[in-house]
Image 1: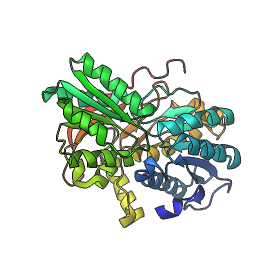
Image 2 (image 1 turned 180 degrees about the horizontal axis):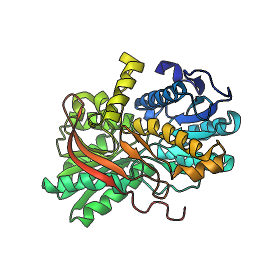
Image 3 (image 1 turned 90 degrees about the vertical axis):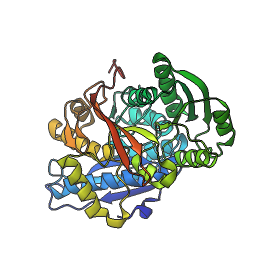
Image 4 (image 1 turned 120 degrees about the vertical axis):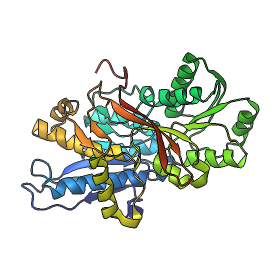
Length: 382
């Protein structure tokens, strides 16, 4: 299935399989930002989900039933998410939601998840502490992502930091943690500025940055388009400070071209991970999508793994009943491109993190590896 055909409000996709004990599909709802800020990265997320479902169906499905994707455009924001979640849960009657979304979309969708009592695996890195009995997260939180970046910049001599973010829960939440960590290590925040999530003119903020005396920059913008516009405008304005981006993924970095060179990222996935599982995944992606392949990244790979984690939970539960699957989700694991993932820590996952620097060709050079980083206290009451 080609990505352009996904640009509709709701699309249902049954991927290849053989003979099944039952033709009644297990329906996976994927609300994702095919339009709006996340539209840069959403196609790669859809491709990862498609591959996982195709592989599972080719191997006989789950409990003798095929898996089916039902994809909805959440427009990367709250209003679109409410429509997408409502359609998936109450009209399409999906068995589970598995999605990479903005925090604004996630927060808007969660009341619908609770009302519909549907398991929801959130596959996007985010600002942390989103707690709901139906929500599980297999991506990173600030406690896992920020310290390697700040420690590296401190070691390079930075003491004065400027923070720039998109004005919503992810942007502010990430930079709140970054501010606290910078200050706890003896650094100083000399400026902190925000632009609305759909904003694209960073001129005034860049002027403040240049006048601030900052020695390093940390940004936390909505994944996708804002990363591109901010970085392009900074490069055009001659900003050459050490620059760490808390929201850019490897795929977006490639789309940014030479503007991304030198950016520091901290991720749970880079394409250069040297493992048999990652090689098999990359080979399968290339074989399936060919020239249409979008670069696998830290937002799309958790989507692939989450489909397999859901499969494992169904098999452990012996059914698709929501309560039984929820009880199983923090007990099962899957070994895939990022290694072994288990959402065992308060509905979150310990993760190996990679500190990387974007190269001139958009690839990421790993400059540090941190094994099994704990997500910390996220949802102690769950």
